[in-house]
Length: 365
Image 1 (tube, rainbow, N blue to C red):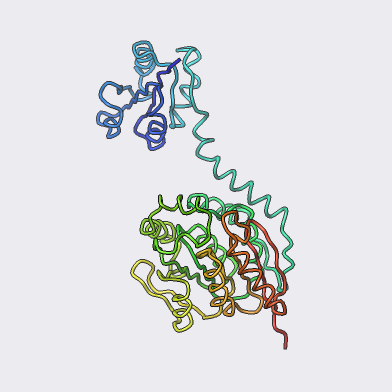
Image 2 (cartoon, helix red, strand yellow):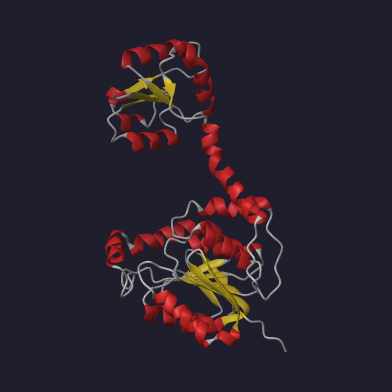
């Protein structure tokens, strides 16, 4: 049976989002506002809009009762904490058959922060032993960990929670030096690396990505990947990266919009990167943490490893993403070749969150 849902106050961002998520349903949606002129009205249409007094006005109860009867309202959605609390107490006597669709907005607003705190507490209480050769820096405070988790949820991308935990643990044992990422796309892992670099006193972050349709899909990758990427725009992805990272750059993070090997040549011959959006960022020329997530063809992955891994400092970490990837084995082949060829330089290696983590040995005199 179709329902008639009252959305009040209809102009709040959460209310508009709720309306848009339900507009294709068969239920009737009615917006209501206490404002004389509410810009949200046009989204509902003249026939599905009501004016109600403010909830603390003496006429509100009667006006709501009349609206329920005349419009056949069966349920109410309200993102306003005060309105929700009042209706939660009023409806059982005013209109027992009418229900509130949502729980208290306070919970809705705070759920994401509570989840972040729970994740942070679990990570701190159950640390991962990465067998690092170098000394481990102290854990971050609980709320700093929660901030990392909370903000990364708002950036699209493929970095799962297990990989995030592993990145956190290796950052604690990184020497000083630059943090370099090959393949940034929307900026999810770049944000993580930037947060960790600042938290543990590493160097500045450099993101290298051509943000170009050419070469997005790896040779030999599953055809499903190729089909999926027809829905993505590299130019839009670059814009998303800028929007996501600009508030956090502040001279500590920058990018080179170019292929990986061109970026390696630039990095080797320059000590800074300057552009209009992020300004000027200085680099030491020695990498503490390298994250390789570029083109996944075997040739490209091998080229990335060959160009960048020699620049990683003793005690530094190399992360080769998608070591286990259901759509191709380029990263795994490149990583396995590196492990085999440079075994004498490797202190430890482990697999977690789909990525291979490798620490270089510290060179003792």
